[in-house]
Length: 266
Ligand SMILES: [Fe+2]
Image (tube, rainbow, N blue to C red; front, side, top):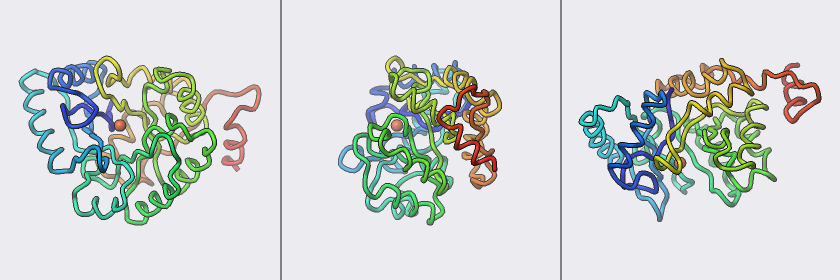
């Protein structure tokens, strides 16, 4: 499996606080069957001033630690990028790293307010040839009354990344509901750990992959954790990624997603 969202690098954001925790996270990921981890520290103006050069230096240092510890885990560059005024300019200038320096950017919307220009930012990125991977929509407090924003962003070409712990219920009932609903309605492209620690928010993906498989089937579950992440790291164009398959379970009673699937099919 490939994890495209992880705060494993020690001491540069609210993820692993030190080397010991980072090593424990790497071991946990490798034991879970993760072969590649994108190191995606926050880039958040006023809070976390990371940039591509700094993140690359931390990755190079941490690779040596992994070799010394005998842990086999491939690390690639990335960032958990928050909304900034000059996002496209900073990406083009190489200050903000995309996932493995591809066209795909990990993009985290604010947790507690729906920003008025969020969709504009997504459209601007797409127009500039950057494909936003929107992180954990299911955990945002404003999704309840703004679900259609995520549908529109997907229609425009953005990708949606659900956090593994949401599918398994680690974040409680609400994120689990939205994660399952989005999987059911074919709005999810990727599962990732968004791990911040080894105990509290660990880099585990398999459990969530299996839980997702119960909703979307085994093939699509594999696309969520392996096929699409791999093609993203290879910078393949979005139209080549496997199309999202929604629920494979026949509903005796129309459920959320039923009408959407019905109309999509015709
Ligand atoms: Fe994150």
